[in-house]
Amino acid sequence: MKKVIIGMSGGVDSSVAAFLLKKQGYEVIGVTMQTWAEDAPHGLAIIQDAKIIAAALDIPHYIINYQNEFQKEVVDYFISEYINGRTPNPCTVCNRFVKFASLLKYAEKVGADQIATGHYARVSNTNQGRFTLRKSFTAVKDQTYALYNLSQTQLKKTLMPVGAYTKEEIRNIASAENIPVANKPDSQEICFIPDDDYAGFITKTARVADIKIPPPGNFVTAKGEILGVHNGIMHYTIGQRRGLGLAMGHHVFVTEIRPETNEVVIGESEEVFTTALTCNRLNFMGMADLPSSRKVIAKVRYAHQGAVAIIEQTGTDEIRCTFETPVRAITPGQAVVFYEDDYVLGGGTILSS
Image (cartoon, rainbow, N blue to C red):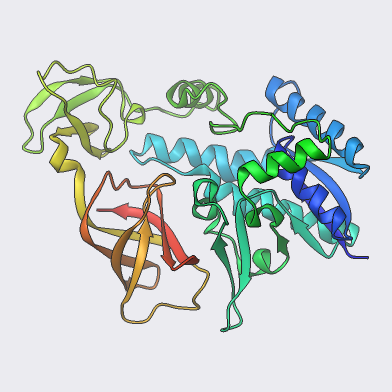
């Protein structure tokens, strides 16, 4: 019997994933990764739910502490990106360097063959001998965007059983099998900022760590005309309209953030659209390398449907992506992920547009 370690978050997806694997004949061991302080209310609730679910499924459950790794790889990165005028995507970093790395490390320790998660995605082996991700059966819940950064080793050893189901089917399975969290709502925010107040979290954490946060500066037009005073560049992101506090008489948007001058550039709706981007920190998945150019579907944020583009590698760790039609709010710091049909070819971090 093959042994599999599954990351359990206390939610319905990872719970049903554990059930499906056990039904398939695996020896399933549940693991919850503690990445928060021992007294964090949301963390204690996660552990409690995971333990209840493991008991209901009659599988062992363990807690492993990865606070230090999470702080270094995710929280410190998150703060650094924001105070330098970028909008980070912490999930893409956490998945590769904390969640999947930690699960694999634990699996090796206990002699498990594979790891598993409750992500809506499917692992696929290409005819070139590489492992990649295929979009989940349900496009509405597809999570391949947040997983594009996984390594070949991680993909090779990973199972994602819920990727073949819709969310409704997963909840129905949980209900039919009396899994306690069948109707538990999905988490909508970043796990370490449960109140969704990014700027407040950054300010509090930076002060404790004696990190200098950006002071207020000027709202300006692209030509340099001063329009008002902003609260600090970490409060803003490309495409933002709400919360600017500018009386312009019509809707205006953040079109650029300039950390070197501490300015937030304001413009009209059409100025938020661009036709190209440059990305780095590349991770190839469905292809070993990039030919001179390739036509793909490029997705620039989690909720983006994707747009037709041509990608060209312009450096060892750099790709230029040119879209057929303008795309809204291309944001430095966010991930761009390249698809062909349902498969992930690779992706990177947006450097500029």
